[in-house]
Amino acid sequence: KPPRHAGRSRRVDRARRRASLNGTPMSSKPISRPPPPPPPPSSAACQPPPQEWSVRACSIFGIPVFLHFSLPLFLGFLCLTHARLGAIGIIFAVCYAAVLFLTVTVHEFGHCLAAQKVGCRAERVLLWPLGGLATCVMPTNPRDRMIVAAAGPATHLPMTLCWLILSATTGYPIRFWSPAVPLEASSLYHWLCWVGLYINVLLFVFNLLVPVFPLDGSQLLLNFLLLRGATPARAARIIILVSVPMAVLLAGWALVNGNSLGCFLVLWLCMQTWRLHQAAAAGRLETHPLFVDVAPRGGPGMSGQAQAV
Image (cartoon, rainbow, N blue to C red; front, side):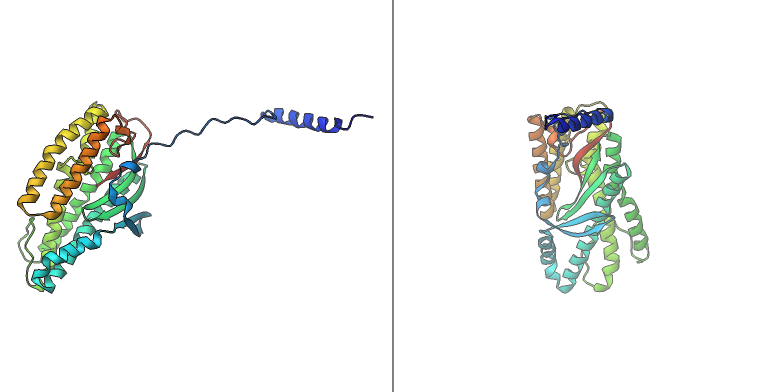
């Protein structure tokens, strides 16, 4: 009589033969698998503080839009500074804020749609008192990054044209500087046209000619330097050297004009420049949002999150 375990041995042999025919060897020991590759470096630790204090307001083109909790304080500040003009001053302050953040939203979605156009992903748009932040997964190709960075300021060209057409219908002279708040409610329409022109021209020039992170000029300057063969470390030093005098000029402009919001903006830009300096000094540029997975010669691949303003 065959032993009791003989049938089980035959079944195990048949199972092993089937496994060998399928190309998967059968073993009693667990198969050791290599550890998964580490995730790409993320810039979450380097993101500016306003990302943490926001609430989701809506979604446009599938991209969530978040509002910072300090926006009501900003609106209250505008109303307070115009309250001396009475109710008409408060109405004009609210209209000014509406035009400003409508313009900023279109600007940020210019970045997001351009990122999607080059095969990347737009994460979110944040609106806060100092403007907007579009968080996108950026390409590593410097040319594609320049396209995404330039798409924001490019949105001001058609918006400026629209405001010019609207201004021409008012019968008043077209002005590109910020007009004083009029005292008559009947002039609200042409005043808003002037404000729309002023905001679009200012944001277009500001984002292109001020290469301070996270403004669009820093992305354009960085990727231009990379295309010219500069290393990320050398590009970071150049951006820092350019950012410091630009911050001084902006601070002087804000103080001369008594622009308190401009002073806060300059202070925030100085903080971002200091963080970039710290990352460069520590040899950790790959952790900074401006340099996450940057390929100097336009290599393939995707980077972590980066921000455009």
